Image (cartoon, one colour):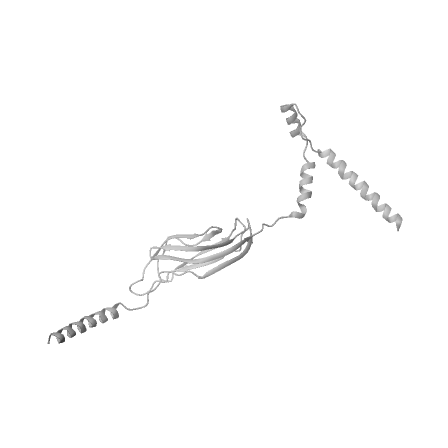
Length: 203
């Protein structure tokens, strides 16, 4: 008799638990989503340059009696090397189906591999997508560097040198002035013309 009562009580408890589980069963619904999700690779970008923008969409995914309502956006952020160029997101996605976007660019400051997060923090939780990219050697116009430096030096007058003389009584460093630059250009023209004439005579 005693064992029968115990078995009956255990059966009743199991029945109650089963009813409660059925009442609260269902699939959990995320408050928001991020698209694209997973890992977004921005590729290789020279240091001190910027990639094309990547748009992330953030929709209010709430539905059902337990999750319907506004989602408050607390912050949207990216890691080092990435910049949020623009965003349409305010402080709230008021209704299910509402969405906003954020445009992200990769702007590396060093030659390195970057792996960071695009993070959206809300009052319902935090969501993120992984963003990656590679900073490469900066682009440079090396072909014109030497000529640019030479022209810069030749175009300076000796006012700096005179100032040094006045201040120290010594000999300041002088550069060719504009007149010297014109003379050098003229000499180059004359020499070039003479070389052409010699070649024509040989023919």
